Amino acid sequence: MEASATSKLLVSDIASSVDHVPSNYVRPISDRPNLSEIETSGDSIPMIDLQELHGPNRADVIYQVAHACASYGFFQIKNHGVPEKTIERMMTVAREFFRQPESERVKHYSADTKKTTRLSTSFNVGSEKFSNWRDFLRLHCLPIEDFISEWPSSPVSFREVTAEYATSVRALVLVLLEAISESLGLAKDSVSNTLGKHGQHMALNYYPPCPQPDLTFGLPGHKDPNLITVLLQDEVSGLQVFKDGNWIAVHPVPNTFIVNMGDQMQVISNDKYKSVLHRAVVNSDKERISIPTFYCPSLDAVVGPQQELINEEEESPAVYRSFIYAEYYEKFWDRALATESCIDLFKASKT
Ligand code: OGA
Ligand code: NI
Image 1 (cartoon, rainbow, N blue to C red):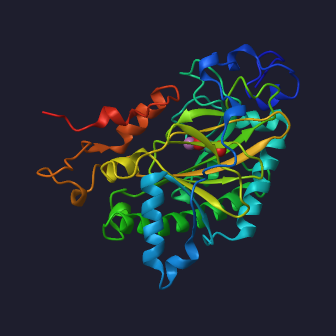
Image 2: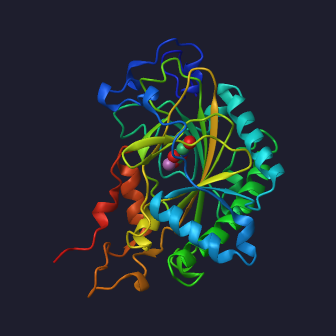
């Protein structure tokens, strides 16, 4: 693929040669990160120790999960069972991937949102008005054997390391889904049973240093369309979560993950657990890598509020209609990344 100096596909290949962000990255004044106003010392999202899930204090952990999901839609987890080595190897191979020469990286480039393995930039270059200071490699990883042959084969350990990581994170997600089901007063397997064959995607997000981080975003405010997201981030801050009218910075804690509710959890829980607005900001001196795992229903799954959480006579009628996940997912990618999720399109009719 030919790319001239002025038509680079990836922001990684622009970042080091500019001292201003190109005009397509510059947001209107009303839509900038206001980095100096961010709460960095105040409220933080809860940290939950998952060790205790497997002992006599399980009920206490379930209570913490219920509180975190209902009040924040976000929590951090420690003692989560994913080996430190697995995490370290994943982060290293992601860094190695993005440090490869442009010619190697662009082999994976595609702007087609339907492709199951692709490298791209920003969010959706086909539909957005402003560009974001991010490149990302997106992979489908469940079942692994259906997708692994599409994954990059360079660095040479990429497939092996990513497969090990995806398998380990999936086991963690299944534990979390049981805890979240219980926290909603449902049987352990309730949420898992609504996901059809289940789906798991990953993104390797690469945010290069940015000469004017006040003018642009790594990712602007958005809600995740999937069920839950399990985010691994390196030691550079950038994630912010919207809570009670303020953006809170979530600083990295080694060997922890950040878990957040996505739109499908909001639907399944019939609005008990809301999908929460979050964003990623960039900075002028350090690159940042984050690796979200997006756990989701399979495309053919029928998603809707859990029966046990609906009571038409009392105060909890079904807020959403049932739909096929493919329908939702298509709507999500059709739009530019917007502050408002597309969940309103799936509300139950009020007649
Ligand atoms: C995402 C996301 C946050 C981050 O990829 O959906 O919210 O810190 N990422 O990179
Ligand atoms: Ni997100």
